[in-house]
Length: 329
Image (cartoon, rainbow, N blue to C red):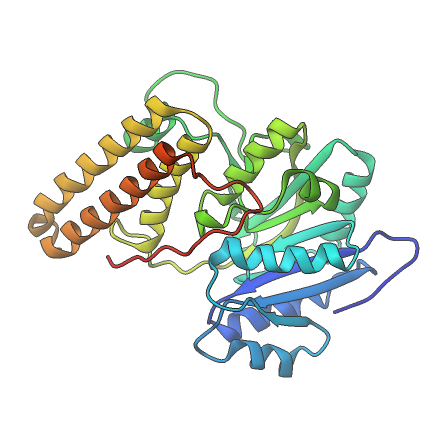
């Protein structure tokens, strides 16, 4: 869908896909129901093996479909789409996962109206439903801390003020960071802060960008406007998965970029020890020790790469192209 309206700021909707062409097309089809009159939908294909780019072009001629030039990961693909959006003169960029469908046609209108009324806010995240409408996904993120990581393992056994969560927020709230499945970002903030750091590939990239936005003075708000239903796959998140690898590696990378050296070293040590314990106990879990030890080696190699970048002072900054990272576990 591409449309313009002189009375509305242009919103570019960026969707990055890799495979799952039917899922992507369902997402793009749902965007047709939006009531916002000034949109440019950009689909960026990360070299899908199932011919998704040609499929999207045939099914959705209204979409500006383009290739990223290779599998650049979620960050690199979004950078391609965001650049296209900024070049087109978009005032706002809606970053949207391909495994989503719109459930509220007015959500873009309501978010734009909120951003126009709050010029100091660089990014907003709406209410997102997880797989079923009515089941709210928590999209409010905190800055990573060792205590927070421990709590996620041990449970909420220690006293303290609970962090805000999407399911309980009834009014807009200022937050540290927002999950990247559905975000409206001000173009001015993107030009000021920069693009995603492509070395993150995927996972923790939004936390890294929001941290940079914090330093630049841009606020991030959760706005409880219902928007989309997020339909992620239920599998692929076990301990030796690609997702877990990137979450662990990128947490270490974020600690390094923000100068939290003790937290970085403690995180690396604790997660490697935990991985070693799991590898040793793998037979008791009905898993292959070889699979777990391969994960340990891969993670240790990734941590060594982060330490190497720290010592050489070559950590990448937002907007600077990064290289891809292999994952063999």
